[in-house]
Amino acid sequence: MRTPVSIVTGSAQGIGRAISLALAKEGAKLVLVDIDEKRLESVGREVKKIGSKPLLVKADISRFEDVERIVKTTIAEFKRIDILVNNAGFCSRRPLSEISESEWDRLMKVNLKGTFFLSQKVLILMKRQRRGKIINIASLAGKIGGIAVGADYAASKAGVICLTKSLAKEGGSYRINVNCVCPGVIKTRITSSLSKKMIEGYKKAIPLGRIGSPEDAANAVLFLASKKADYITGETLDVNGGLFMD
Image (cartoon, rainbow, N blue to C red):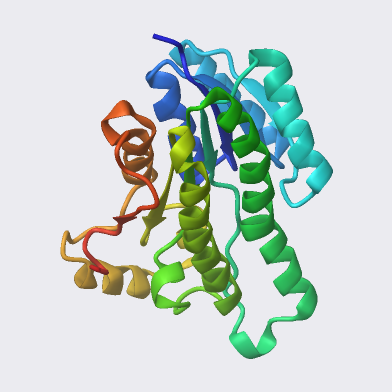
């Protein structure tokens, strides 16, 4: 069986780090992408300990030239791309009335523009291969709107959910599966700034009674990247402990 070549954006911390380590344990050839070079190198060392030799690419996915470089670098090294995990993004918590045009544009460039154009470039290659898997990381906020997060963040993640469906329709006849993972409240650096009272409130509201871990989200990605999900496309997999059910 061919060892899959997998790109993970935003791989230096949190959910991206967990996804990178999980894929490494499955034997994937990894291309780890992040704007934070120091943390990227740290994750690279962790992946090496598992037995993988990752290709590290410092890049800002909001820049079109960086998106092109990610794809070109991957093809030069591995000749193909089998899995793309669009995880890179950042969260805002600024009140709706205080969101500036520049802040809106900056967030959209990373969370939605970067995801779109990297998917666009990779989809072209996957069509030639007539196979591939793209997994987008959205958020519960993209379904229910921003409460503890900004309206701009929620809107960007709603866009990712809809983009997933468009990509799935585009790639279906080429045996390309495109799906989305929607994490709820996950224990990461983003949620570490929430008050203890707010965290306890979430725990009470979540039927499974706990905050999610980055590994919970990574396990969902592993499933969607596997052959077990070959007949699933255009779907959104909620990973929220039952906080929101639809």
